[in-house]
Image (tube, rainbow, N blue to C red; front, side):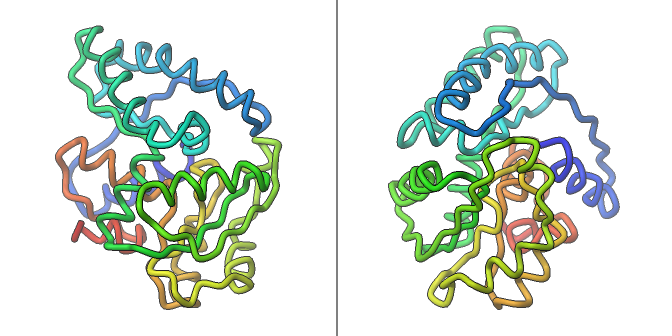
Length: 233
């Protein structure tokens, strides 16, 4: 959340007049397990309340798997609940989450079949695949990198991703989700994988940035943000 989304917003500042400040509240998680994800999600109300004190214009809940681990379609319930928390504190800030942003970004791109890379363990990856499938997409292939330590997820070298994708079955995919996790870096690899595969590439960070810009009522063009941030969606 605190690396690639600000980087994308900085890139947008090179082509548009708006300037952004970045504020954060943390839900604790050390290991990407169901129990820790559930505890993390329980802290989201506190975080939304804290950020609403600052009267920020948009809030992004930036853990895709924490949302998806709470049950099919939960991104809608989470956004509705947290919006209620924010409104109750007198803030008009928009609330988005990376799970919903990924789904909406795929819909905007007209995707039906996708290939997905995640840093998660295989059971959590299967859960993510089921969640995405429940939203009307077919996952043609997925790769679970099986990184359980959250700091190790953040330290994963994004330049490993082109080689990982090369070993996947993506021929029938409309879009490649290069990182289904905001925490796992992928931005430097996005243009490489697009060139390598000839497919549009989406990441959780790109989708969340797109959703936040829409929440702000701003144009969605960001240099280097791939198809979704081309300004056409």
